[in-house]
Image 1: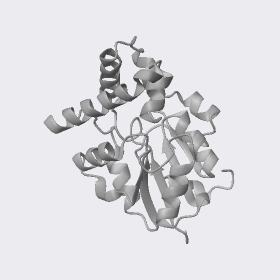
Image 2 (image 1 turned 90 degrees about the vertical axis):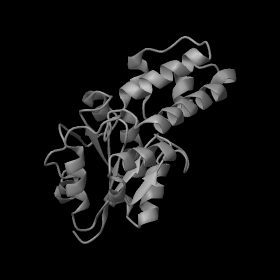
Image 3 (image 1 turned 180 degrees about the vertical axis):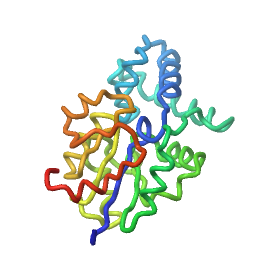
Image 4 (image 1 turned 120 degrees about the vertical axis):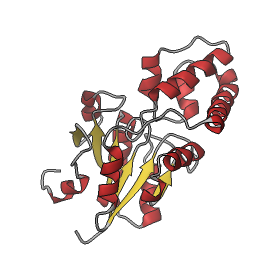
Length: 223
């Protein structure tokens, strides 16, 4: 392998199991605006999109959207200031990341709908921040499924788009990767069903992180 490869990961639902936290804070945000609360399944289905887009899609009226988003962000900051947020890493993810980061010419990054502040805090809490060469969030530009984050991350580290891999658990990740010209790999342990990921363009689905090397796909003629 002569050229560098960038492996981009989604965060919520791929690296971290944050659904319970997100569902709780999102529900409270709707209650704060006296708006009917969406179901946990409805909230989980939209994890990964920009926060305002999530809320609008879940039924938050436009005239209450700014206040609802502000409440959500404030509540997340309040909880983070009191104790580490309950968003554990999925089993096997840390070992997987460290194995990949140790490979020659492989760079790791994150492309997520999470805020940059929240992402940096989460990665630091889990002791994995130093593994990533680039972080991209909606703070940098358009969020998923727009291909911007993949394009911008590749440009930042000097990797060709056809040498980029996007790994995620939602259809938004797969659509973003495909639009950007990157390899799209879905994970089975997140918030969207594998059948949905395949329908959205996933090249393949990963059953578990242990022993899985995404770089191998660049050695296969059928991908």
